[in-house]
Amino acid sequence: MASTSQLWNFPSNKLIDEQSSGNTSQPWQSWFAQVTRLVSGLSQSGTTADRPADVTAANGSIIRAGLYVGRMYYDTDLHQPVWYDPDGTPGNLWRDSTGAFV
Image (cartoon, rainbow, N blue to C red; front, side, top):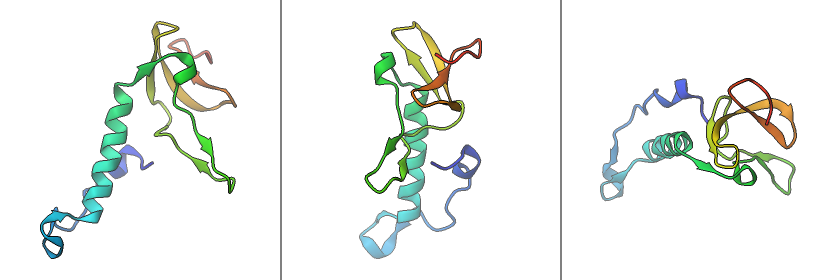
């Protein structure tokens, strides 16, 4: 996922692709998809077991689940927000407000 500083670098081409019956141009579609992932992460909540997690594809590459350092998730089991930190150990990548991995 793009960093937030990249998100605000709007595509330089037109929003509407006049060559494709007035559809949104591909660079803008990608930009809107990034913004959607970012915004949905700001309001996501659920159980500890349902926290977003990276997935390893069959070829060994990591598929990001909209995770970035500092991404918040409200954990309904803990009744508190937690923040993503990839410096943790596998399966323990979320910190609470005290900085402890939870």
